[in-house]
Image (cartoon, rainbow, N blue to C red; front, side, top):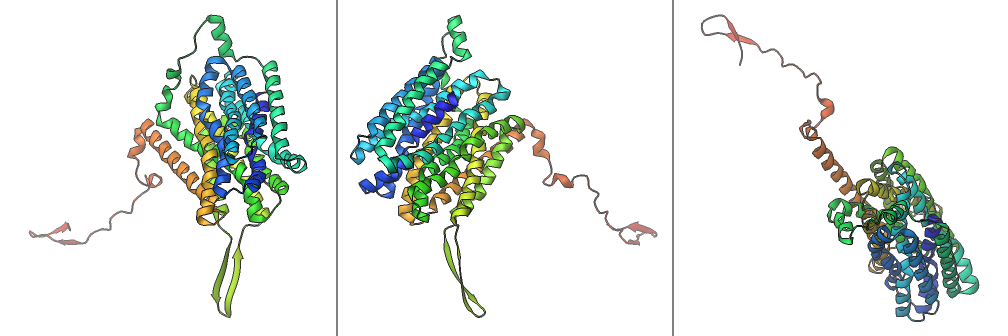
Length: 438
């Protein structure tokens, strides 16, 4: 039920990825203004995650999630009455409340499962990211038939309905039930926030800034990208963008199970390595070359066609889905008593990626005039995350096992026989006889 509710929230949270295209045309927005509009809901949904995570630990996920979903539904319905760009931005801030449901769900769901199963459980819950694909599949048809206002009203009504059903059919988490039975008070807010001082938490946040923030940013940006680069209509662009969103959501379940089996660290290496290759390939702009050949100029062109782009986007979404689950596998293990606050911060930073990156994509388009500049930025981001993770792990290994620092530069060569020194010729001794040369 939590996964279903989160799917509905995510569908609302990314609603501007579709209706924003028509709003851009109606208002004549620039690329930067469009990026700001689609990113504004992500800002709200990110900034409130820490607070909602703490409140979930204190008051329970059922109640907090009900308030979050009903508030987002009201704002989404009000969106249909916006007319000016400023009004759209204000309404978008309210729509973004839906994104806070992730922090609520992580803190709520994880308390029903032991540590060895939390990776899989949170992977299943996180598959609610598929709500982005639900919007891409359904919203274009509703928008073409009835207008973007109807999309906002229908999505708002469904969100409110699912909020009530979720509250009625779920139960409070075991920790909250135990505290009520014993009269124990919840941990104070300032104690809940104390782990946020650790650099490790912020390193996890950078991971999530890419695997989730970039996922959300591309989920919002790809319809616009496909329309601009390949000249597709909005319905076709929405369908192809879903080829990225769906694996980025559903395979999160597999990522959680894999993190339980082989460890989250190995999964993160796979995620960053595959993403590095994919973003490099996608960042290469369509280029025409003229080579001075033997018989005269040779002209050819390198460009990513639509089919190749879709395949690479699918692989990138798959890699990100594994990483999203792996990041949140770390948190209940390292911070079992502060899942709400730590998960809230990591989710907040990741969500901020979904706000900042679309704006950066639009600004880079305006600045460089190159469509693939968005993937160039993501390549730099994932390369930085991979380097920080690798050197942090090496440092932890050396701290835990100091003897690693005494290994030779090439430990695989240790113990191999060395070539003996060749025999030196003898020379006459001063007093007669022979002595070895020095």
